[in-house]
Length: 70
Image 1 (cartoon, rainbow, N blue to C red):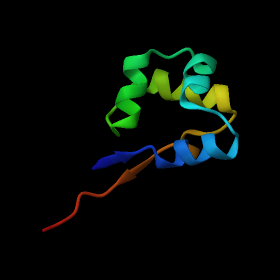
Image 2: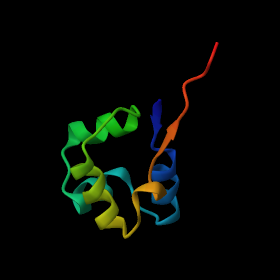
Image 3: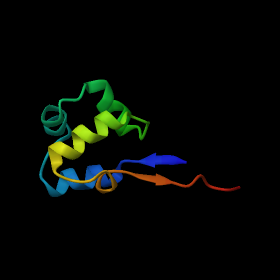
């Protein structure tokens, strides 16, 4: 399964926050933001910090996408 953080980026636009604002508010490292931008796995601790900073649940910032069957 693939991970998508598109919900997070849309939420930031709705809240008029930049990715740098989120990084500072959640206290996460720049390399972690790079992983998020690349739709790579991050720890639940990081996801929890993001959710706490934005006041949302995990399903509001990410989703699992099924692998395409070929």
